[in-house]
Length: 208
Image (tube, rainbow, N blue to C red; front, side):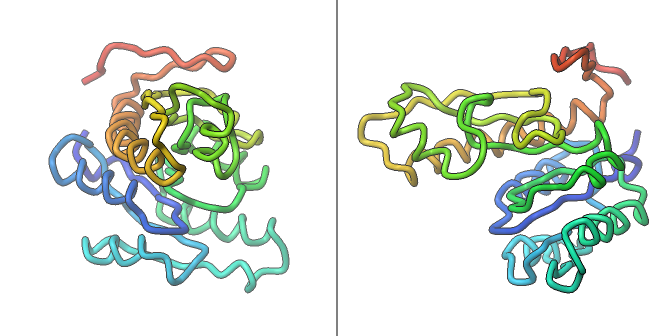
């Protein structure tokens, strides 16, 4: 498979550091895929400029331009379907995808979350981890289903929580690991190495 054969669509709302990690992995030959489009619900998202600097199509859809969440999600889905996307990657996308969107791309949506799921789903997870007193946190790449941060787990990385940590310092150390495991998980999907049974993901040997 050449790098242009497997097409990714990336959904962003913010800085785009995981988008940058994916772009870097493609550029370095570590990820055999092509980003066909970057989509955002926020026109000012810095991630869009990151994409444009690499000559990647970057599109904004304003949720306020649509009658409701369902209509917005269907418009988002159409942008991806028009480009025949093989995999949808959420990279700091701050909207919950509705069931219509998820069904259209069932088994083809992944997300990265800054905790060791199933612990601390949702938002503000670094502060939750510190408040709870955990000794280790980390990040999780998982498939997306209709349960928020509840889909089958692909990869995880562990990060120790230091007594001196605040939410920001912990988030920065977790982010380093996010940038490592997200491209790796995508490459495993490109290579068709994942098998899901019930909610458990197992790994097959690399398929050429």
